[in-house]
Image (tube, rainbow, N blue to C red):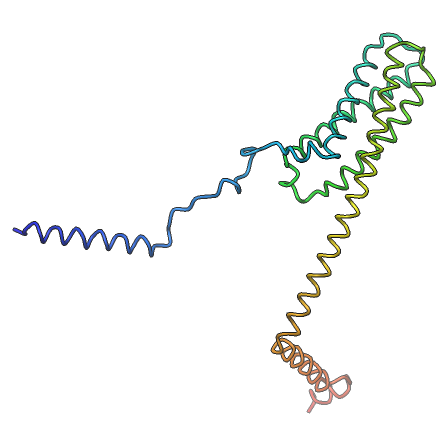
Length: 234
């Protein structure tokens, strides 16, 4: 029978061997960082956006559109009703779309969908909402019956128009800055690639060799079909 010292030696060798094989094995357990996980986990509100000018304007637009929609919904009788229906559609659509954009920007959900140009999307929404609110408020002011709910809806409609107009101006400036920054990044990337090619002479020699080889092959290839037929008959 083996002694206790020999058994301890075998156990030490086995443990060291298992550690070495585990370190060299390619099948190692991997853990995915929490920040790279998909889904709605880890969502946090962005207070900097809500404290900024665009965030405050978004909140004001949602509140004004909602109040205007509530005011127009309290009207029970109308004649004609086209202006009321149009104002109702504009206020409801602006409230829903602007509310969705507010949620996307405040929770940084737009960063997870980089395929969409969110600056341009915000610009289109604010510009279109400002124009439609302005038209709907003018039409409702011209066709109202001087009821309290109609007058309140017109007032909040013009206030929403002003909020969307200011947001449109800021969105245009932000969109221009993003376009200018993208063009600058493309220019810097192109200059960097050209400098890399200039700093590596082997690439230039390879390009020169490829060009000379193509020219030589073109010179040797027969261009006259009669001469080609003569070579085939010979």
